[in-house]
Length: 474
Image (cartoon, rainbow, N blue to C red; front, side, top):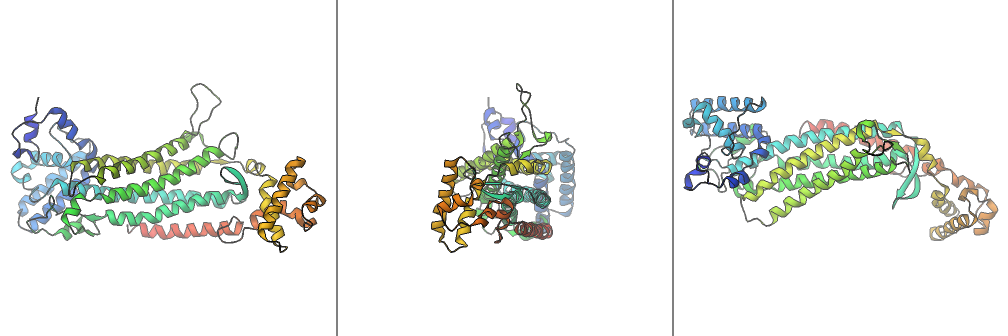
């Protein structure tokens, strides 16, 4: 049965004579999602009402009544006493205006929407909310980075295998591994202000698509709401959702880094590796096997990254087929961005907790080192004697093959056996089989020597100090 009473309360109800299918009412509503923007919607309404007052559309008394009423509505939302009318409150805009009319009377509340469209309202609400949430994320990433830097500095002496293709490759410092992700998160933090800058532009005052007929001051409204400027084309302003896509792309990139470090830590915390142990606060057990301690936090972080990437791809597919200006399909962006921001925010905070409470086992890391990881050291040894690297690479490979044939570790081969492979090996070749020496030889900037690690730590510390000041201006 059609619901004609609900339709009479809709902001668009006058055009229609038939009622809505109750299922369509449910299908169409967005208040369950966009109620998250209640404060932003009220702030936008206050700025819009003030602009209309300044143009003479509202009297001072009418504006004062609207301002007082909207503040009352805001208090109800904050106190969780706002009474939502099911099948009436289609979205946050409808709900706020309906309640305002109950408080101050519809004769005044009905003037609030003069010259305004919900197309510009939702675009304004989204941008205001997203700007503030992204600023929070910036502070969470900075906290994550501070934890990484602190741990890298404190545990700088730990040496472990570095892996490529998940095979033991060369010895590195544990801090080098930590900082490799630290610099990925540094890049995420540096990209964030650019995202915020394009989010923080005002569509308010653009109407449904063609602009506002009452010549209200868009710049004044933008300034009141803390926007950096206005969007200059009204059709673009109400229908642009690139700011959502760009945010979700940024979040997907960030979550890719979260997923990869989580995968590494899942491996390193396994009994087969035993390099680290997760705190109980970030682990769970098995319902059947009492000995199990599962890294569920890390596994969930891997899974959540797929969720964020999926939200971005899904909404991009929604947008690609739309004609110009606003279309109701865009409503799907609300659920996508809400889920993306909540998931990313929680993920960063969980990862920070995992890293800050992790127990490390440097002895297990060192035990995982093996002499074959120093094969490149043998090649470099001969390079220093003037042998071309392509030749030394081949010679080093022969030494590896000899050790395997003899059933020995490379460092157990005597000088005479090495000279059977190549006469240019001398007694000092044994120096190549020292892990500390191998690590310290990587003195070129970016390498894993202690000096380089300390330099990288200082770079991140300087960046964090700089960002700390800049974040206040975002």
